[in-house]
Amino acid sequence: MRTIAIGLLGAGNVGQGVLRILTENADAIEGRLGAQLDVAGVLVRDLDKPRSVPVPPDLLTDDPQRILGDPSVRVVVELLGGIEPARSLVLDAIARGKHVVTANKALLATCGREIFAAAAAQGVSVYFEGSVAGGVPILRTLREGLASDRILGICGIVNGTCNFVLDAMGRHGLDYAAAVAEAQDAGYAEADPSLDVEGIDAAQKLALLCLVSFGLRVDPRRIPTEGITRVRAFDLQTAERLGYVVKLLALAEATESGVRARVHPALVPRDSVFAGVHGPFNAVLVNSAALGRSLYYGLGAGMMPTGMAVVSDVVEVCRNVLAFADAGPPPEAFREVRDAEPLPIDEVEHENYLCVHVPNVPGVLGRVASCLGRHGVSIKRMNQDTPGPGEPIDMVILTERVAEARIAAALAEVDRFDDVLGPTDRIRIVDPDAVGGVP
Ligand code: NDP
Ligand code: HSE
Image (cartoon, rainbow, N blue to C red):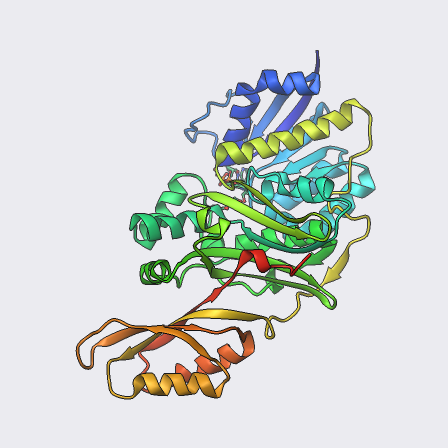
């Protein structure tokens, strides 16, 4: 039986998942590939760190050159996270003619142009299925399964940590800090969890989805992005009473003038399939011209789901190695990729959930309502508790559909009122089925 050597950069959550899958599923992999995968070295920072998956000490190293300089290593699996040293090591591997598999969306969303160009020049592959939606094979689906279709829009729950946190707060009554700590303990969160809760990780994944869906290279830092740090248990419970569930959504639509991409929390209708996506699960709804809507669902984070996606990429690369075949479709899915600035979202229209913080004093509701009215924001529904005179109220208002620019201007004015106690909370209301329009 032929053996193909692989080198592993990183043995954290995902790296250990990869090692477990290579051991536990060795027969299945060998049966499909017709070869054995052999780990030639594992790069870590701390050689003495206890690991839940034991790594033979002779494989562990803190010297990347032991792996990159080993001519037998055909595939380098990068699972370090972050930009450096991941970028330099990936480029070094490519320069030595090694194929690369990574789950690092921060790296590819930021430095993809340089890495894909280097790989194309060297004739090696870069696979990155684990970088978006963990174990859900969404990139392969977009690149291959939908290769003949035109993608109109994408709506995804693509950050397992945020989905877990919102679920834990809304359904299980955990407070925010405890929910984030649980997501970290479970291995879902990034090494710096602010990347998750600020929506940055979701924006990086959305940039990769835009690349593979539309052939457009979007800088994730230019995608309008809001995370979940301002979503309170009160908002989750009130949304539930009103027939909605709060989710962090990543949205992209192809329009005549370019791509409209954004990441933000949203109220989704309770009867939407997205409302049933719980814990670390992810879901991506793709709206494409010929197929219409199709939905991809599964575990979006964690050692085994992501490890599975990574090892499946390794198997794919090794199939090509064994067949002496060129790499399959280009990693970006398109032969030519264009740079794109995401369109401004000022004209995008949503219904909105507002929570205005005011004291219970005469006339306050009227002042808020007339300010909204002056800016063309129509109130659909209003709800408030019945506190005593002067006590603070969480005044909940659902608006009719209104353009972003209008509601933003209205709330800027409301928040300047003397008797407004703090910035108004706003969560957009989104029907995931409507993203991308009618196919
Ligand atoms: P971890 O932080 O758990 O693991 C990182 C690993 O890289 C550790 O083994 C660490 O060594 C090693 N490492 C980091 N920096 C260096 C360095 N400078 N030199 C040598 N070794 C280094 O991260 P994850 O496994 O959670 O994530 C890895 C990648 O996968 C990230 O890009 C992440 O975004 C992505 N990803 C993660 C998912 C998840 O569910 N966790 C899901 C999908 C993608 P040591 O162990 O000694 O500290
Ligand atoms: N931190 C990421 C998440 C890992 O929670 O979704 C999966 O990419």
